[in-house]
Length: 141
Image 1 (spheres, rainbow, N blue to C red):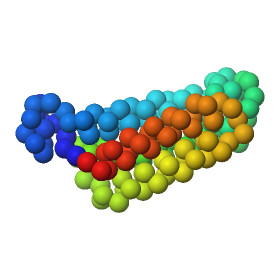
Image 2: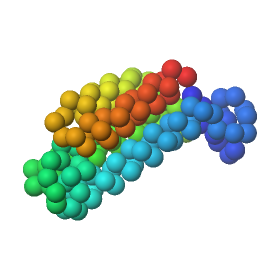
Image 3: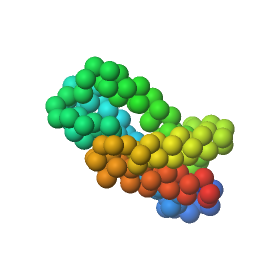
């Protein structure tokens, strides 16, 4: 749960990042990539076939674009909550935010697996499952 400050782990004093901080960083990077994808969807990029729930080709309809925009703050919260739980400096959020992120990510993953869209069940569901496991690793450290 420690972060590396100035090349030294804040908790154990070692010179390398702990596995927990690496997993938290990877999780945040995946959230950031998904945020960029949601921005592209909301801007009208023709990626609807790859979008969660997307069943057609081309750009998302206006209502779905709004959902893509609303998904961005949730992803940002999830990333910051996990980074805080890993002990990154400057993020002294309460511990319950990490657990809230775990619950939210698990629910999102379950919804992806329950979707009728094949791309959502084959890509977004497994990705959500891996991201849920990553949060669990960070919180159990």
